[in-house]
Amino acid sequence: MKLLSILMLSVVSLLQSNHTVKLAFVGDAMQHAPQITAAQQPDGTYDYSQCFEYLKDDIMWADLAVVNLECPLGGKPYTGYPCFSAPESYAQQLKDVGFDLFLTANNHCLDRRDKGLMRTCQALDSLGIPHIGTYRDQQERSQRIPYIADVKGIKIAFLDYTYGTNGIPIQGNVVVDLIDQQQIADDIALARQRGAHAICVNLHWGIEYQLKPVASQRTLADWLVTQGVDLIIGGHPHVVEPMEVRYSQEYGKKVLLVYSMGNFISNQSDIDTRGGAMVKVSLRMQNDHAVIVEPRYKLFFVQKPVARGQNYVLIPESRPDLLRPDAKAEFTRFMSRTHDLVTSHNIDVPVEK
Image (cartoon, rainbow, N blue to C red; front, top):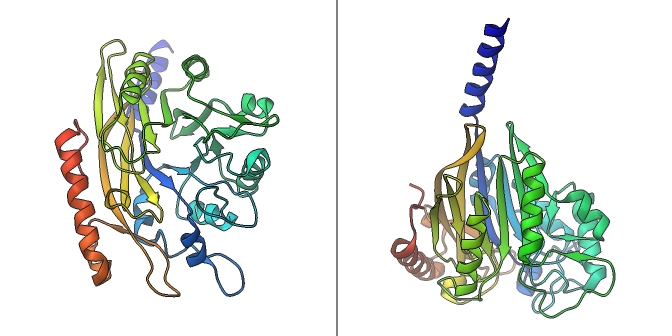
């Protein structure tokens, strides 16, 4: 009987070690006013189905795909910068193309004040979309944090924090997860206590349009590595910043650090903001712990509409054939500049072949 138990445990361990969970991350999903106009249909509805068509296979590749929703679903009137409010159909389309977890802790989460934050939470709940980073009250946060996804038997905890809210204060009971080391440490400890095999900390940090991480990002990343997290995934600068694989001597494992993936989709015009990176990585069980394998990135470009009836379309680097002639020069320039940056500074995070 004892031998049978040992054999069964060995089989379970072998099967578990062969499980691989595929993760995909993208950056800031914006909704500027021209994007809202482009999506509006004659009947008053909003259609975003054109936007993500050519990236859908990459998103669906993942067992779990994560996006930063950088616009409240605050209701009408729908508005772009500086205070965003997007239609709920935008979130629905992001869900339909395969995103499984929405991050909402960012500097625009209070653009429609407390009411907009609460409406965003309600809208995402009604659409059946898991989300973290903002909460209607502390009780709701306590119920949702840490968010642990059990994928193929691998339990992955996701946490989400922002540096601020553009100076807009909370007026009532809503909660925004701000970057606070004590709070982050407590959340990491709770995630580990609840059985997480891997911990992913998502951060809205850094300085907009800076192509390299600033000192505050580096310092916080160093500290997070000492806390034993497995993935550090950043956004906010609206441009792609370097990525690297660190090795934690204390925990004896690799850590994926992504400072910024740039924009997912936006109307921004500076060449470095015209696209972004999708980061792909897998997790595999090894000695009762999840380890990261095969981290890589893939670039894409935002092609803007030029005529009525056209919408914003994400064009993967591998599909220049999808470009309009007028967009080819900007596409080439964005790809060249971004690859130059990551080739010079990335550490063990190659481009996807």
